[in-house]
Image 1: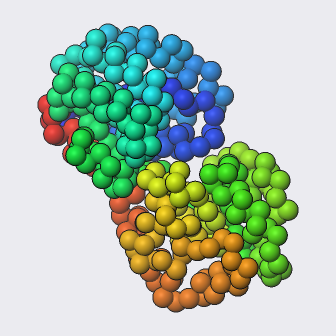
Image 2: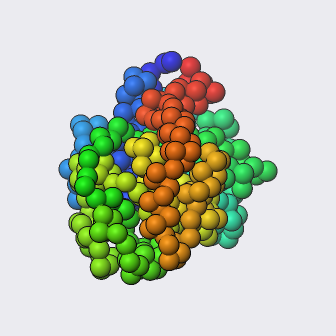
Length: 343
């Protein structure tokens, strides 16, 4: 494959909160595997140390800054974006319509079902129409969810990408069974359910862990974890609690679910969400649970000892490790590039 530039745009990346930093670092690794010239552009007021020499503090005025990148582009270049709001997508589209060259390619990843966007996705569909008209097959619409792909199916064909920010987690022996609720303690991630769980009686061998901001009567840890601390808690945990709202997470993926499974941990989720669909797809309906069940902890301890459940979870782990990886993301970059003049 011919060497070209891969520009990863992250106008919202300012802190380590959320998936975006880990995702961007994995995309960098994948691009470098393919021998590409990688550059990441993040907000000018980012509060993190930039991971490598390939990263730039850049975005102040999004339209002006995108336009400058396009105007100064000389070699074949892919512009990739995966986290943005509707205004930013509109401004990026406008800059591409005005300044894209014949060797410009735009890859845009969609993280929500079509009906979850403003105006039920009509604005996003119109922007895709304009980009396809301007760029032809040099515009790639991407997602990381088969469910999201289905919602776009008759309108815009989406290519399903792996979730690349997975890694090897070292299992750390613990005397207690740690039930971890990772991430920001938002309502959409199950704060109500966690309040209920924390009030249930449980064995002294069970320890619930959550972020300080939750104010739950459990073991509280820092709201923002370093990658090292995150890896440590994942390694120590037996159960990953993911009571995500079924409406908010109907289509969108969860990187934490992917990481939990690849780490060999047992995730528990609510019915109706994308997470539940993934577990059902691997015949793990036992892990789609009622978080308000008074026997929640007794049932969960039984699941941890259930040989059939563990065998199916091991099979899902193997499948995830094969698909959701930096190496596979790199192969998708190669295959997408070969579909156009980037050969």
